[in-house]
Structures are given as C-alpha cells and as structure tokens.
Image 1 (cartoon, rainbow, N blue to C red):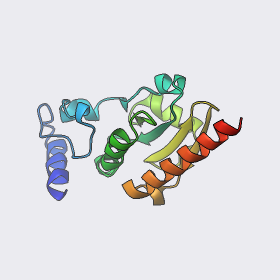
Image 2: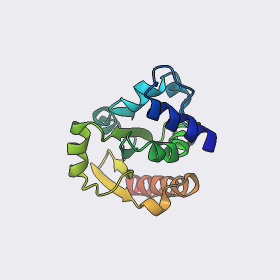
Image 3: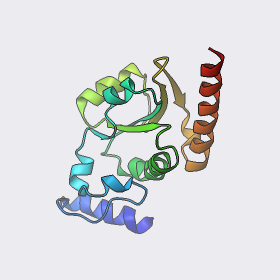
Image 4: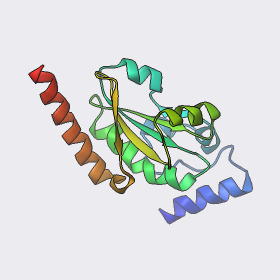
Length: 158
C-alpha cells in the first residue's frame, strides 16, 4: 500500500501523469484502463448521479476531491467491494469535488468534510449519511446489507 501511495504521490509531484503506473488496487477492473491523469481529472467515477437516480437500485454516493489522493486510495477498497459484492443491488458514484459543479452539488447534501458517503434511496428519493467512522469495507458492507434488508421489508409491507 505504501508503494502505491508513494508512486502516486511521486507522479503527482513531478506532474508526469500521462501514462503513469496502475491505479490503486481496489478500483473496479473496468476503471483500471484509465491512466492516472484521466482518473484524477474526471468529474465522476461510476454511474452518473442523474442516471443512477432514475434506476430502481439504491446507490452509494461519494463526494471526494481528487486533490486529496489519500482519500481516494482509502475509498478504493470500498468501491471495489460495492462493485463486486453488491453488483445489481447497489450502484456506485464518486463525484469529484475538484470540479465546481460537484462542489455546488455537495452543498445540497450539506457536505462539511470529504470524503462523504451517502446511500441514496431512489424509490423514495431520500438519502442516508454514513458517518466517517464507518469508512472501511467491513462496516460499509454491514451497513449496506442492513439497509437492503430494511428497504426490502418496507417494500414488502407496502
């Protein structure tokens, strides 16, 4: 892990990002095709927010700034876990708040600190904030499983 962080930090500091090393481990396999520069300079990763909102599937929405590469490295295993273990049950979207439109959008969610994770219920058009003390794979997995059970029970009772 230190080697990955060191490689990414070195690349950022030297501004030679065009065809840098692999993305941090934990990024879904279809994203690894991008070079680091395009990854850092994308306004979003995963399903676009507006597309995800139109789906019946809830999604994990993350606000993170690519200028803070350590946050993205910390989130990578969570993204991979959601992508692999909850595929079809949850969509995943990271909005890069380095871009002004995403900064403005984060204000609607009252984001005070980044990264910030939310579960979006697309059926009811509501969201649930996930406190940062739960930002690890094991705890996020538990939260998503409990949330899925609760929303399925709620749907069945209606």
